[in-house]
Image (cartoon, rainbow, N blue to C red; front, side):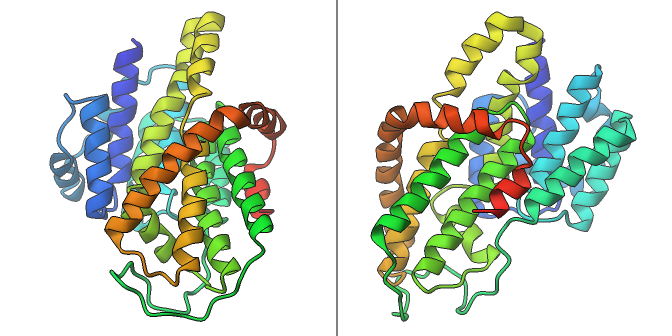
Length: 319
């Protein structure tokens, strides 16, 4: 039962991730890796995309495995989180969400609440206009830089990493989307501290270069979250206890820490690192973040306790 529902959830989420037909090569690679490692029996990404573009996808068939109210609500929240991970839904994503909502036969009040919460989180993503052309050139031109307070910037990075780690321990699916928003706001703030005003597109592109795909990260994280959410309900107390221990070793603290320090070195150096150098640096920083995660695990769990029941959009907006 667990494997069937998990497969159905990943399948539905992949359709949501590709609903607008837009996916960078890095994003597609990350999604394909997730498909192969989680549910290799599912259709290829090209097949899923072709079905969506021709509107031959059978949404009722996609949602058929979700037979109870809790799993239907989880499926809806997951689709909303994926489609709004990089901002408000496009028309194609809106069509897909409307079809999913109708097929799931959701009660209006909780369905509206989930979408409103997701929209509020999406609104926290960086929207400022960039003062330079976006892109990750091999060698960027030198630009005027501010010299930020090193201690203050280190504290900012650590606080964002602790918040992301705390969000990962929450059972709500939309907390996954909030992790991505925290990471994007961190990159924006690090750039701003160096005198660079970034737009959302540039932040997303930097994440994509190092392999942190927007849709793929949300799909992967909520697939893992499903184990501590729906699976916990099926398995009972013992299942939740075991799953909670596994979740506590998640990657959100490490990836956020790595993105913060990657951005710090990238912008402090005048954006002179190329894509290969950025990926190598990011991989090294991930290892450092994983080592520190064990050290900060008590603070991460404390942060998670404080976040329970909080308005996540307000929490992120206050960063």
